[in-house]
Length: 598
Image 1 (tube, rainbow, N blue to C red):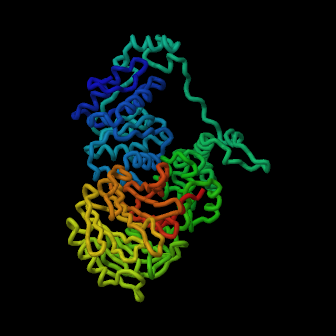
Image 2: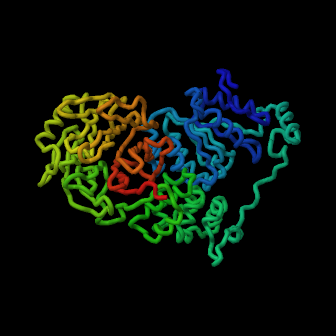
Image 3: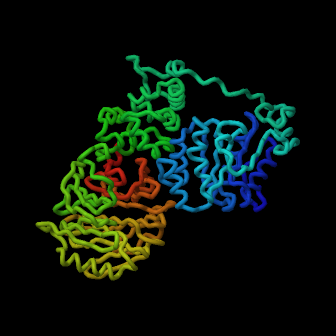
C-alpha cells in the first residue's frame, strides 16, 4: 500500500527498494526523463516493470505517477511498435514521425513504460526510430528495460545521462525479504539477488528451425496445411523463423498465414518486403497490431484488398467475421479513386441509391451505394466543406468551412421542402444557433423536415413547423451529426426524428427532438468524435460513431449487447449508412462494409 492509501500489487523477491526508487523517479520532475532498468538475465527486470505498470496505470493513480502507455517491446519491429503505441495512446499514426507529431500536439505529460527492449526484433532500430524521437518531446518520460552495453542501451547515444538501475546491485533488493521469498518458493537464498537463479531457471531454449515448425502444423486429408486448426503461437514462431531464415516474402502467397498468426511477428517478418498483400498489411497495420481476434484481422485485411487482389479477398473469406468489406475505392483503384473523403451523405430524392462524397477542396461526387461504381461530379469545388446533406426532396445542402450554407436544387424536386422553404428553415436554424454552424444532417423518411444543424458551442438545433428548438448536448463544438426516422408506417405517419450527435468532447448523444434528450451519453471515449451515422435496420435503430484514433463503433441501442468495434488502420473523417452498408470515408478514399456478415 502506498503512503496515500492506494493498494498496489505485491512486489516479490525483496524488490521493495527498487520499487520505491521508481516511485521516487516518477515523483521527481527534475529527474532524467529516461530511466533505464538493467541487469543480467533472470534478475527480475520484467517483473519489476510489470509491477510498476500494473500499479501506475489504474484510474486512481495520482497524475504525477500515472503511466499513460505500456509498450512490451519483445518481438516488435519499429513499425509494429509505432502502431501498437499509437493505439495505446489513442492516437492515429502509421509512422514514428506521425506519432511524435500527434503526441506533440496532444501536449499532455506522458510516461511510457517499455519492458523487454532487448527482446525486440531490432532493439537499436526501435530506439533510434521511435524512443529517441519521443524523448525529444519535453513532456515525455520513458522507463525502459535495457541492459547496459546492449545494442538497445547503446542506441540512446551520448545525450543527457539517464537514471540507471542495475538490479544486480544489492542496494535494490532487501536481503531478508529475498531470503523469505526463496524459502516460500523452494529457492536458494545464496543466489541473491538473482530470482531466476534462485529458482534454478535456465536460459530460454534455442528457437526452433522453420522445418521443425512446419512439421508441427496440422494437415488435411489431402496433405495440405490446415491453417484454421493451427495455434496462433505456432504460426507466430513460423513467421519469426521465416524472417530469420529468409523465407518471409514467399509466405504472402497465402493471406491466411498473415491473419492467423500474431500480428507483431508477422509485421517484424514483413519489414522490407513488398507485394500486394504486404502493402495491404502496411496500410492496415495500426488496426491489426493490437487486434486479438483473427476474424477481425481477416476482415480488416480483406477490406484493404478489395479491388486490389480478388483471389486474396476470396481466401480471407474462409474466416467469418461480424463485418465484411463490400467495396472500396483505394488509391490503387486508379482513375476510379475519388480522392480523400472529408464528408459523406446518403443520397435521397434524385440521388436515391447513391452516396455523396465531398473531398478536401469541396468537390462533391456520387458513387453507387451498392457497388461503389463512380457516378457524376456534382460540385467541382473549390470551397472546402464541413458537411453536406441530401434532403428527401433531392436538394443537396452544403455547409462550408466558414459555416455558410449553399443549396443545390435538383432538376425535378421530389416531395419535400422546396429550395425557398428550405432556405427559410436554414435561416431560422442559423439564428437559433450559438455561433457558427459546425455540421448538419438530413433525416431520411421525413419529407417535410429541414436538416438539423450543430454549432460550435455544443448545441443541436431542429426546425419543425417553423419552430426551432435547440438543445445543449456537448461541451465544445458539435463535430458530427446524423439523423433517422423511427416508428413510422411510411404512409399516414412518416415517423419520428432521431438525431445522433458527436462532439469534440468525445461524447455521442441521442435526441428525439420531439422529446427530451437521453439523460446520458450513448457513448464516450477520449478524443474528439470525427463522424456519426444513423439508420434503421431490421433490429431497430443503428448508430455508428468514429473517433480521431480511427475506431469505428457500431451500436444497436435497443440491444444492450449490440456493439461492434472495427478499425481499418487509418483516420475516419466521415460515415454514412446507405443501402444496408456502412460507408466510411477518410484520407484514402471510401470503403463500404456490411454489418453482421456472419
